[in-house]
Image (tube, rainbow, N blue to C red):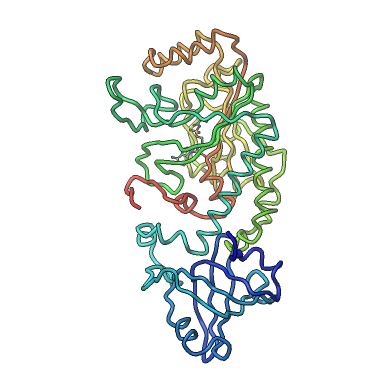
Length: 432
Ligand code: NSS
C-alpha cells in the first residue's frame, strides 16, 4: 500500500512527513500539547499534537479521542531518545477511522474474570501484546529448528478414531455412520507412521484434552509441537529436545528482548538455558523429593507440586527419565532391564514451572505393543494400522511433545497458561 508507513520504519523517515494507521492506546497532555500513544502492526509510538501547530479544531479533536479509537495520523518524524522506540511523530493532521467510546479495559487494574470475559479486547493490552509476540517467535523458532535439522512437517488429523494418550480426557463427537470420533490428544501415532516415509518428522497444531482440573497448567485446547525420529533411542531423544529448547530460548532473547523487558522478565535465568541439561532418573527424583521432606511414594506419577520442588533444585531445565510403566501411556517402550519402567522422559522447566515436554522411546515390538493395548483395555480394532507399522521395516524410534503454552508461560515468566494463548479454552469458559 502506498502513502502509509509503519512505526518500525520511522528511522528511514526522519524529518519527513508520513502517515501511519493504528489505534490509540493512551492520550495524555496538558494545556496546549497532547501526547497520543498509537499502536500499529509494528510498534508503539508517541504522536505529539501541539495546539499552535495543528490549530484549535484539530487539537480539540485529539483531546476528545477515546482509548482504542482507530486513527490515521500524519506528521513529521523526529528522533526522540526519551520516547518509546526512539522516535516521535509531530502531528500535522489526524483522521478518525473508527470511533471508540468507553473502552472497557483501562490502564487501571481489573479482575481476572472481567479480563477473560473481555479477552477479545484484553488482547490489545501492552502485556498481552508482548506475550503474543513472544508466542509468535517461539513457534517461528520451532519451525526453523526443525527445518534446519532436516525434519519434514506432517500435518496430523484432528478428528481421530484411535485414542492417542488416555481414555480419561477425550472429547468425542458423532461421526456420521462410523460411531464416535475423538478430537486429537496428540499427533504422535500419525507421526510414527510418517517416520517410515521421512525418518524425521514433526507436527505443530492444536490438541484437545477434557481436563476437568482447574489448574494454572492445564487448558482443554492447547498447542503442541511433536517430533518423531527413526533410529533414535531415549538418550538421543533428550539430546534433540535440549537443543530445540535452547534454540527457542536463544531466539526469543535475541529477537524479543524489548518484550521480555516489558514483561519485567529476569532474563538471567533464560540465558543459562544451553545444553547439556541435567538428567535424573525417576528413582533419583523420588529420592530428591524425600530429601526435601516431600511425602512421595515410588510408583506414583509426579504431581505439579513435586515438579515445582524438583525444578527449584536446578538452574536449567531438567529431564526426569524412566518412569513406572503404570503412570505412562501404552505406546512407551518397556525398559530392557526393569520391566516396571518405560524408556521415557519429561522435561521440567526451571523456576518452579515444571513439565513442558513429554517424550519416550516407542514400543517397536509387535507382540509387546499388542499386549499393552489389551492390558490398557483399548479397542484393538482401532489400532490395526498402528500395529501394522511394527510389521513393515519397523525400527527403534523416539519422539516427544512440547506444550507451546507451557513454554511461552515459562519464557514470559507468567503464572497461568490462560495468558499464553490468544483465546484460552478451559473447563468453565468457551467465550469469547
Ligand atoms: O501428554 S504429553 O506428556 N505427551 C504426549 O502427548 C505425547 N504423545 C507427545 C509425544 O511423545 N509425541 O503432552 C506433551 C506436552 C506436556 O509436556 C505439556 O507441555 C503439554 O503437552 N500438555 C498440556 N498443555 C496444556 N494443557 C494441557 N492440558 C496439557 N496436557 C499436556
